[in-house]
Image 1: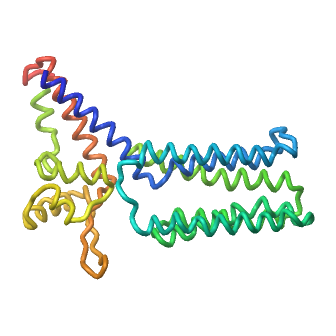
Image 2: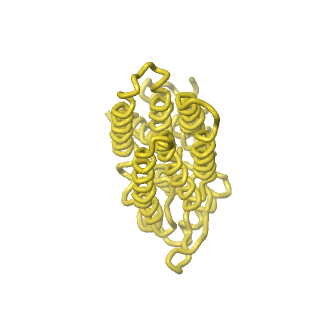
Length: 192
Length: 108
């Protein structure tokens, strides 16, 4: 029946609009995912995870984040077509930032008095990567998030607190900032 | 109610070309004037008029810049445009449902 087909078509369009709203939210699903990863990861000592297990747990969380990012990309961004040039450049620049993080974390990790700093090298690199994204895409959110995470990464290790407390601060204020940003963007997009 | 629903359809979006423009922009996020012209097979003047109408209604914004030393016009849907299109789809859905029920035009 033609009316039934028309109704199905309208519903299809509404479903596609919903996907488009998520896409328009500026990467909000990724903020939520990685915010949750950081929040849980940095709070692992407080969740009763033994010290020897924290490294493997972080690897597992990062794997969850990576797989989740792929699924989000396939679900919401697959039909967007080829990435714009700037976006490609930004993604490739991640290799530089993350390469720096791996190298610096390894270096700090081998010096026992500064081993704890290795935990904050990754967010420092990610903060710098976000700042670059903010400059390239003229996105105030990316820039502010990058600055905030960068400041946390440098300031927290300098605080006269035990490592577990420092990690908790990064989890709450770093991971929390990512989570809050992502949820806020999704909320705004959902009401458009 | 069907009569009221008909009258509540947004005239700005209801025109075929403008409906197509809004659909493309909502799905792709943004589109250049050239892409819109290619997809919709409209003349510069015709497309320009529809883009202006949507811009004046606040449903899209038009940005002009240079890309590889050539002027480029990009259209992006606004939050108001997204909401208006959503309302338009809801109204269409209610119209079709009323028609399927066989509601006479003077009843809701």
